[in-house]
Image (cartoon, rainbow, N blue to C red; front, top):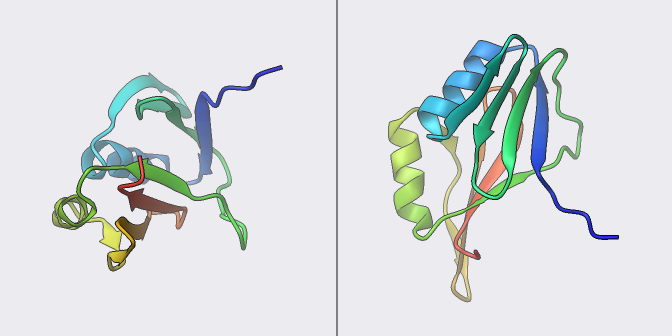
Length: 112
């Protein structure tokens, strides 16, 4: 048996705000725009937003986005209104964390 990750679903009570963030701030193309259900093309995996209660747990999953230049991507996202942490670098690996409007963590990495 081989499993393939196809979609990450985030539940949210703030659907309009989250759509604006994933579309306008992170720049993902909206694929499905159904009532209470939105999906975005995020490369090899979709990101889906589902209306309903959404509160990250104390150790909620973190979505990682692979980018070529973490620092430049961080600056571009900040210019679009994203709240981002500092870039950390060690042994050629650059990382930077952020959170979406619901508080779900994500990170940028040049690992990919």
